[in-house]
Length: 355
Image (spheres, helix red, strand yellow):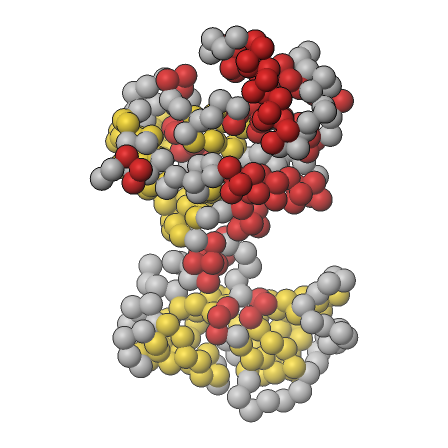
């Protein structure tokens, strides 16, 4: 394997234990150069511990960590070619924006004029040209976040690490800054590892997502793969809303199967699941709701109806259970108690592999 083919980051059966507590449990993965990979999962799943192991802030109990093919398992944080953008930004409040960004270069031995010139170029790159002389307290939350990113990328690290970078921003600004981070990463071809517990955030910024649960990798893949083809109940429920219902499967060939959902027959990929009783994950937006009877549809009755401006949400009682439905094309709200007919968009349904 040539140097250009080596992954930017590689974990080989890495474990991290704190006494009897296993934070990371024999985790293996690779991160290719120029990609943004998100470590996603609920609190305590091991994602932040994994990020700290990449950064060298914690040492692995077992296994090996490689950066650009070099084993860094036992190297300190300062000896690894990585930079981190912290959740709190960690800007020096008494230093100007320029001095904050130049600080790492100066600390590594670069002459101040050269360091400040490089810092100016990086600030322009992230859209903060002209703000070099301001203090962090004179900036908005989004601008402070960009200073933190500039301070990290000015060091030209092999890997850029983000630790919950948007958690201190309000909802509107969070969306704006996440788009900026993604645009910057793609424009500069940066290799980035991004930690978040927010599924929407992960779907929006990632080339690939590694979902963690109880210190292990539950599933990894592209945002589309994880959303459309969840590996189990946990992934189906964690990657957005999902109705998990009982059904029956009959294989039709190497890929497809007939899935019987109540009185509705669907053709879906069988995902190597055997014939017989199965579970199917149904995304709420994959259910079409009609306030009339249709022979080929699943009958139901509206139990709950809420209008939320750009969409309506329903809970509908059916023979396969109560289904949560999101209707983004609702002109009029269907009243509670109305008998309805449900049909399904196959792209929003997935057979769940056996546990």
